[in-house]
Image (cartoon, rainbow, N blue to C red; front, side):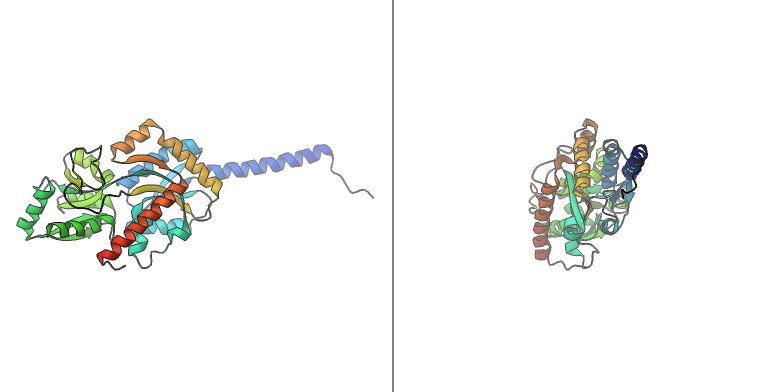
Length: 327
Protein backbone atom coordinates (compact mmCIF):
# COMPACT_ATOMS: atom_id res chain seq x y z
CA UNK A 1 0.00 0.00 0.00
CA UNK A 2 1.45 3.34 -1.01
CA UNK A 3 1.93 5.92 1.74
CA UNK A 4 0.10 9.19 1.72
CA UNK A 5 1.75 11.88 -0.37
CA UNK A 6 1.17 15.58 0.08
CA UNK A 7 0.03 17.39 -3.06
CA UNK A 8 2.95 19.07 -4.81
CA UNK A 9 1.55 22.56 -4.27
CA UNK A 10 1.12 21.93 -0.55
CA UNK A 11 4.64 20.54 -0.25
CA UNK A 12 5.98 23.67 -1.93
CA UNK A 13 3.96 25.86 0.43
CA UNK A 14 5.28 24.02 3.49
CA UNK A 15 8.86 24.32 2.21
CA UNK A 16 8.41 28.03 1.55
CA UNK A 17 7.00 28.59 5.03
CA UNK A 18 9.92 26.74 6.59
CA UNK A 19 12.34 28.88 4.57
CA UNK A 20 10.60 32.09 5.60
CA UNK A 21 10.61 31.09 9.26
CA UNK A 22 14.34 30.31 9.11
CA UNK A 23 15.05 33.56 7.28
CA UNK A 24 13.02 35.53 9.81
CA UNK A 25 14.89 33.89 12.69
CA UNK A 26 18.22 34.68 11.06
CA UNK A 27 17.13 38.27 10.43
CA UNK A 28 15.99 38.64 14.05
CA UNK A 29 19.35 37.31 15.21
CA UNK A 30 21.21 39.74 12.98
CA UNK A 31 19.09 42.66 14.23
CA UNK A 32 19.81 41.92 17.88
CA UNK A 33 22.09 44.68 19.18
CA UNK A 34 25.76 43.93 19.68
CA UNK A 35 27.00 45.09 23.07
CA UNK A 36 30.53 46.38 23.46
CA UNK A 37 31.45 46.16 27.13
CA UNK A 38 33.79 48.86 28.42
CA UNK A 39 35.34 48.53 31.85
CA UNK A 40 35.72 52.25 32.50
CA UNK A 41 33.30 55.16 32.96
CA UNK A 42 31.70 57.15 30.16
CA UNK A 43 33.81 60.09 29.07
CA UNK A 44 37.19 58.38 29.47
CA UNK A 45 39.55 57.56 26.61
CA UNK A 46 38.49 53.92 26.30
CA UNK A 47 34.82 54.90 26.24
CA UNK A 48 35.38 57.46 23.46
CA UNK A 49 37.30 54.90 21.41
CA UNK A 50 34.52 52.34 21.83
CA UNK A 51 31.83 54.81 20.75
CA UNK A 52 33.88 55.89 17.73
CA UNK A 53 34.14 52.28 16.53
CA UNK A 54 30.57 51.33 17.49
CA UNK A 55 29.15 54.14 15.37
CA UNK A 56 30.83 52.72 12.26
CA UNK A 57 30.56 49.02 13.06
CA UNK A 58 26.77 49.25 13.04
CA UNK A 59 26.91 50.21 9.36
CA UNK A 60 29.31 47.40 8.46
CA UNK A 61 27.43 44.75 10.44
CA UNK A 62 23.92 45.95 9.64
CA UNK A 63 22.85 45.82 13.28
CA UNK A 64 22.82 48.25 16.22
CA UNK A 65 26.08 48.35 18.19
CA UNK A 66 25.77 49.69 21.72
CA UNK A 67 28.42 50.63 24.28
CA UNK A 68 27.76 49.16 27.74
CA UNK A 69 29.88 50.77 30.47
CA UNK A 70 30.57 48.38 33.36
CA UNK A 71 33.03 50.53 35.25
CA UNK A 72 35.04 49.46 38.25
CA UNK A 73 37.93 47.33 39.49
CA UNK A 74 40.15 48.15 36.51
CA UNK A 75 37.82 46.45 34.05
CA UNK A 76 37.24 43.38 36.22
CA UNK A 77 33.47 43.91 36.36
CA UNK A 78 33.21 44.17 32.58
CA UNK A 79 35.41 41.11 32.13
CA UNK A 80 33.19 39.07 34.44
CA UNK A 81 30.16 40.27 32.46
CA UNK A 82 31.79 39.03 29.27
CA UNK A 83 32.44 35.62 30.81
CA UNK A 84 28.76 35.34 31.76
CA UNK A 85 27.46 36.47 28.35
CA UNK A 86 26.15 34.05 25.69
CA UNK A 87 28.81 33.03 23.17
CA UNK A 88 26.74 34.12 20.19
CA UNK A 89 28.75 37.04 18.80
CA UNK A 90 26.47 39.67 20.35
CA UNK A 91 28.67 40.58 23.31
CA UNK A 92 32.20 41.94 22.93
CA UNK A 93 34.72 43.46 25.31
CA UNK A 94 36.80 46.42 24.15
CA UNK A 95 39.80 46.69 26.42
CA UNK A 96 43.48 47.33 26.65
CA UNK A 97 46.33 45.40 28.22
CA UNK A 98 45.48 46.03 31.86
CA UNK A 99 42.37 43.90 32.20
CA UNK A 100 43.47 41.06 29.94
CA UNK A 101 47.22 40.80 30.54
CA UNK A 102 47.92 42.32 33.95
CA UNK A 103 44.88 42.24 36.22
CA UNK A 104 44.88 38.39 36.45
CA UNK A 105 48.52 38.62 37.60
CA UNK A 106 47.88 41.07 40.43
CA UNK A 107 44.50 39.81 41.66
CA UNK A 108 44.10 36.58 43.59
CA UNK A 109 40.56 35.92 42.43
CA UNK A 110 39.77 37.99 39.33
CA UNK A 111 36.72 35.88 38.54
CA UNK A 112 37.87 35.08 35.02
CA UNK A 113 40.73 33.42 33.16
CA UNK A 114 41.44 35.12 29.81
CA UNK A 115 43.03 31.97 28.38
CA UNK A 116 39.92 29.86 29.13
CA UNK A 117 37.01 32.29 29.24
CA UNK A 118 37.76 34.65 26.34
CA UNK A 119 38.74 34.46 22.70
CA UNK A 120 40.53 37.29 20.87
CA UNK A 121 38.61 38.84 17.99
CA UNK A 122 41.02 41.46 16.62
CA UNK A 123 43.24 44.31 17.75
CA UNK A 124 43.12 47.78 16.31
CA UNK A 125 45.72 50.04 17.96
CA UNK A 126 48.59 50.51 20.35
CA UNK A 127 49.07 53.44 22.70
CA UNK A 128 51.38 54.79 25.35
CA UNK A 129 50.98 55.87 28.94
CA UNK A 130 52.16 59.27 30.09
CA UNK A 131 52.88 61.38 33.16
CA UNK A 132 50.75 64.51 33.33
CA UNK A 133 50.71 67.40 35.80
CA UNK A 134 47.77 69.52 36.85
CA UNK A 135 47.70 73.25 36.09
CA UNK A 136 47.88 73.91 39.81
CA UNK A 137 51.34 72.39 39.83
CA UNK A 138 53.99 74.98 38.88
CA UNK A 139 56.13 72.28 37.25
CA UNK A 140 56.26 72.05 33.45
CA UNK A 141 58.73 69.14 33.14
CA UNK A 142 59.73 66.00 34.98
CA UNK A 143 62.76 67.77 36.45
CA UNK A 144 60.53 70.61 37.66
CA UNK A 145 58.12 68.12 39.19
CA UNK A 146 60.88 66.26 41.04
CA UNK A 147 62.20 69.54 42.45
CA UNK A 148 58.68 70.65 43.41
CA UNK A 149 57.94 67.39 45.29
CA UNK A 150 61.24 67.64 47.15
CA UNK A 151 60.64 71.26 48.12
CA UNK A 152 56.91 71.16 48.88
CA UNK A 153 56.44 67.67 50.25
CA UNK A 154 59.84 66.73 51.63
CA UNK A 155 60.12 64.17 48.85
CA UNK A 156 56.64 62.74 49.33
CA UNK A 157 53.96 62.97 46.66
CA UNK A 158 50.79 61.37 45.37
CA UNK A 159 50.18 60.40 41.75
CA UNK A 160 46.76 59.40 40.43
CA UNK A 161 46.38 56.19 38.43
CA UNK A 162 43.21 54.98 36.65
CA UNK A 163 43.22 51.54 38.32
CA UNK A 164 44.99 49.75 41.17
CA UNK A 165 47.88 47.42 40.39
CA UNK A 166 48.05 48.75 36.83
CA UNK A 167 50.96 49.70 34.59
CA UNK A 168 50.62 53.33 35.77
CA UNK A 169 50.92 52.22 39.40
CA UNK A 170 54.12 50.32 38.69
CA UNK A 171 55.40 53.32 36.77
CA UNK A 172 54.79 55.50 39.84
CA UNK A 173 57.05 53.17 41.82
CA UNK A 174 59.73 53.21 39.14
CA UNK A 175 59.74 57.02 38.93
CA UNK A 176 59.97 57.22 42.70
CA UNK A 177 62.95 54.87 42.73
CA UNK A 178 64.65 56.73 39.87
CA UNK A 179 64.39 60.16 41.50
CA UNK A 180 64.60 59.13 45.17
CA UNK A 181 61.04 60.23 45.86
CA UNK A 182 58.44 58.67 48.14
CA UNK A 183 55.63 58.57 45.58
CA UNK A 184 52.35 56.88 46.38
CA UNK A 185 49.80 55.85 43.77
CA UNK A 186 46.20 56.95 44.26
CA UNK A 187 43.97 54.48 42.36
CA UNK A 188 40.75 55.70 40.76
CA UNK A 189 37.82 53.95 39.11
CA UNK A 190 38.98 54.89 35.64
CA UNK A 191 40.68 57.86 34.03
CA UNK A 192 37.65 60.18 33.95
CA UNK A 193 37.42 60.73 37.75
CA UNK A 194 41.20 60.95 37.99
CA UNK A 195 41.35 63.69 35.37
CA UNK A 196 38.42 65.47 37.03
CA UNK A 197 40.47 65.68 40.22
CA UNK A 198 43.49 66.88 38.25
CA UNK A 199 41.43 69.61 36.59
CA UNK A 200 40.13 70.60 40.02
CA UNK A 201 43.71 70.61 41.37
CA UNK A 202 42.77 67.96 43.92
CA UNK A 203 45.82 65.96 42.86
CA UNK A 204 48.99 67.30 41.31
CA UNK A 205 49.93 64.49 38.95
CA UNK A 206 48.50 61.48 37.19
CA UNK A 207 49.63 58.66 34.95
CA UNK A 208 47.31 57.37 32.25
CA UNK A 209 47.07 56.82 28.52
CA UNK A 210 47.60 59.51 25.88
CA UNK A 211 43.94 59.20 24.77
CA UNK A 212 42.92 60.09 28.32
CA UNK A 213 45.07 63.21 28.49
CA UNK A 214 45.40 64.62 24.99
CA UNK A 215 42.40 66.97 24.81
CA UNK A 216 43.13 68.63 28.14
CA UNK A 217 46.83 68.75 27.27
CA UNK A 218 46.08 70.58 24.03
CA UNK A 219 43.79 72.96 25.91
CA UNK A 220 46.56 73.74 28.40
CA UNK A 221 44.50 72.47 31.34
CA UNK A 222 47.06 69.77 32.20
CA UNK A 223 50.64 69.24 31.05
CA UNK A 224 51.92 65.89 29.75
CA UNK A 225 55.64 65.85 30.56
CA UNK A 226 56.81 62.33 29.60
CA UNK A 227 55.52 59.37 27.59
CA UNK A 228 56.25 55.67 27.43
CA UNK A 229 57.41 53.95 24.25
CA UNK A 230 60.55 53.82 22.13
CA UNK A 231 59.95 57.11 20.37
CA UNK A 232 58.10 60.36 20.83
CA UNK A 233 54.44 60.45 19.88
CA UNK A 234 53.25 62.17 16.71
CA UNK A 235 50.38 63.73 18.65
CA UNK A 236 52.84 65.22 21.18
CA UNK A 237 56.19 65.62 19.41
CA UNK A 238 57.61 67.98 22.02
CA UNK A 239 57.09 65.56 24.94
CA UNK A 240 60.13 63.35 25.71
CA UNK A 241 60.00 59.63 26.40
CA UNK A 242 60.81 58.22 29.80
CA UNK A 243 63.77 56.46 28.19
CA UNK A 244 65.16 59.85 27.12
CA UNK A 245 64.93 60.89 30.75
CA UNK A 246 66.79 57.80 31.92
CA UNK A 247 63.81 55.73 33.11
CA UNK A 248 64.12 52.42 31.26
CA UNK A 249 61.97 49.29 31.19
CA UNK A 250 58.79 50.78 29.77
CA UNK A 251 59.59 50.86 26.08
CA UNK A 252 57.04 48.24 25.00
CA UNK A 253 53.61 49.72 24.38
CA UNK A 254 50.17 48.36 25.33
CA UNK A 255 47.44 47.37 22.88
CA UNK A 256 43.70 47.78 22.37
CA UNK A 257 41.55 44.90 21.15
CA UNK A 258 38.15 43.26 21.02
CA UNK A 259 37.47 40.00 22.87
CA UNK A 260 34.46 37.65 22.89
CA UNK A 261 33.28 34.87 25.23
CA UNK A 262 34.99 31.51 24.72
CA UNK A 263 32.95 29.31 22.42
CA UNK A 264 31.86 32.14 20.14
CA UNK A 265 31.52 30.65 16.63
CA UNK A 266 34.50 31.36 14.42
CA UNK A 267 32.15 32.62 11.71
CA UNK A 268 30.94 35.37 14.06
CA UNK A 269 34.49 36.28 15.04
CA UNK A 270 35.50 36.48 11.38
CA UNK A 271 32.44 38.60 10.56
CA UNK A 272 33.21 41.12 13.30
CA UNK A 273 36.93 41.11 12.52
CA UNK A 274 36.28 41.83 8.84
CA UNK A 275 33.91 44.66 9.78
CA UNK A 276 36.52 46.15 12.13
CA UNK A 277 39.17 46.03 9.42
CA UNK A 278 36.87 47.97 7.08
CA UNK A 279 36.10 50.53 9.78
CA UNK A 280 39.80 51.14 10.37
CA UNK A 281 40.27 52.04 6.70
CA UNK A 282 37.80 54.93 7.00
CA UNK A 283 39.75 58.22 6.96
CA UNK A 284 37.60 59.90 9.62
CA UNK A 285 38.05 56.97 12.01
CA UNK A 286 41.82 56.85 11.53
CA UNK A 287 42.06 60.61 11.98
CA UNK A 288 39.97 60.54 15.15
CA UNK A 289 41.91 57.70 16.75
CA UNK A 290 45.28 59.11 15.69
CA UNK A 291 44.35 62.52 17.10
CA UNK A 292 43.63 60.76 20.39
CA UNK A 293 47.21 59.49 20.49
CA UNK A 294 46.66 55.95 19.21
CA UNK A 295 48.82 54.20 16.65
CA UNK A 296 46.18 52.57 14.48
CA UNK A 297 46.98 49.14 13.10
CA UNK A 298 44.77 46.12 12.51
CA UNK A 299 45.79 42.94 14.33
CA UNK A 300 44.01 39.76 13.20
CA UNK A 301 42.98 37.22 15.79
CA UNK A 302 46.22 35.23 15.90
CA UNK A 303 48.42 38.34 16.05
CA UNK A 304 46.39 39.81 18.91
CA UNK A 305 46.62 36.50 20.77
CA UNK A 306 50.42 36.32 20.39
CA UNK A 307 50.83 39.97 21.40
CA UNK A 308 48.75 39.41 24.52
CA UNK A 309 50.81 36.37 25.51
CA UNK A 310 54.09 38.23 25.05
CA UNK A 311 52.85 41.23 27.03
CA UNK A 312 51.62 38.99 29.86
CA UNK A 313 54.95 37.15 30.01
CA UNK A 314 56.87 40.44 30.27
CA UNK A 315 54.64 41.74 33.04
CA UNK A 316 54.80 38.46 34.92
CA UNK A 317 58.53 39.10 35.29
CA UNK A 318 58.15 42.82 36.14
CA UNK A 319 55.53 42.17 38.80
CA UNK A 320 57.51 39.31 40.32
CA UNK A 321 60.75 41.27 40.51
CA UNK A 322 58.94 44.28 42.00
CA UNK A 323 57.93 42.18 44.98
CA UNK A 324 54.25 42.98 44.48
CA UNK A 325 51.91 40.48 46.11
CA UNK A 326 48.55 39.73 44.46
CA UNK A 327 45.71 41.32 46.37
